[in-house]
Image 1 (cartoon, rainbow, N blue to C red):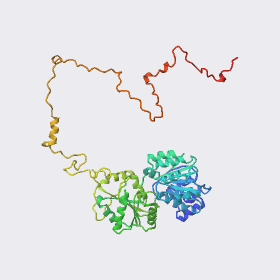
Image 2: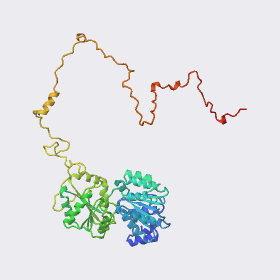
Image 3: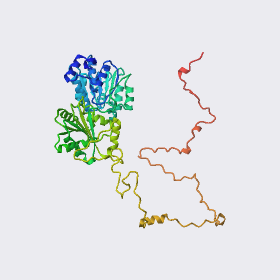
Image 4: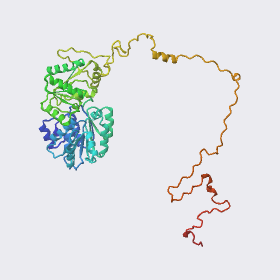
Length: 517
């Protein structure tokens, strides 16, 4: 099947032809006609199968008619990483060059003012990461109630990175009258439940088994001690015919260390990780695409969606903690029908991680020997990953070399107590028994105690004070108020025989004194 049979317009077909593509991939062949029909899609395909073009190409034709309003984008594409969002923006520029569509890219590390100016002009296609999009929304710079097409790309990666709450909030801001395209490389139960909430009667498109590796990727596994990994990596690079390669590390701090080690030994290496500034990341990635950097040492920010032309090799310096990350890492090579090679360096303590990967992909990774280095086997006594390190102690310590066993305890030897301890022991020693108290009948008779005579309570405790002298000679002294006991009671203000006035008394309002008929 050719692109002409998918129902795309002539300007889009011309752009695809100029790019050099003639045959659509399986995911493109199945997804593009459904997107043009306006239906929701739940697409699942392994990395490197062309998922980006499967929604970019039909979206260009859908948005060809209409006009964007200020701060109200017509379509929205959510991506988990900045690099993947920038790559989707490049695809829109390539395939949409024959259309007059405005596009804006909202990612972190870029000035807010430039992005706000692009939103003010009106945007047909808005490509963003969830965090930066919510920042603009809270500032009141973007309105999402006019979005007609929503694309959630690499949903499983968003789940791993913790972006799902932000995605749920963004979807809640959109109009329910929209078309939603949901793509993921894997389909765990969490992603399936999320798709059921976002999609309306979707068409499921699956072109390969979830979490499967490409058939044209030659895999290899090298088991070496942890301290020999750098040497093994250098020998593998020298032994292979490498055009360009990515070396993946689990930790960002190891990326810079390994890149410095490779450069020290004469390799053309660069670094890419999340702690770098956005301009530095884009510059490094562009140099790697142009061939100025041969080996790119990176974290998992480069494991999703990056399309490097004819990349020959991928090296896993560390076994990934998540088995799905292994599929995405090695998927950077062997793309577009080319043959790729991947090598994973594992220490004896990482046997359980390798076992989880082999269980996921349903195949055993072939073991490879490094020239000039002796291969070792996995340690069955170690736990998952690196947790088992450092648990065994010397024979004199509290634990033996085997997990779950303890060294025998030495017999306890009594020692002389210290002076301070002797005092404590003396206090804790049992006291001599007391003599029993005599019976009540045997006790001596006591005289009753005579209480002292109390004074009368009504007598004042203090003498009355004399009245103060007047402050000035010309002012008469103020009369003293009578004591509280000398004041008349409020109930005694009137004689008991006198009638107490009730009601209004003599003060009757005029409107109440009108004669009655």
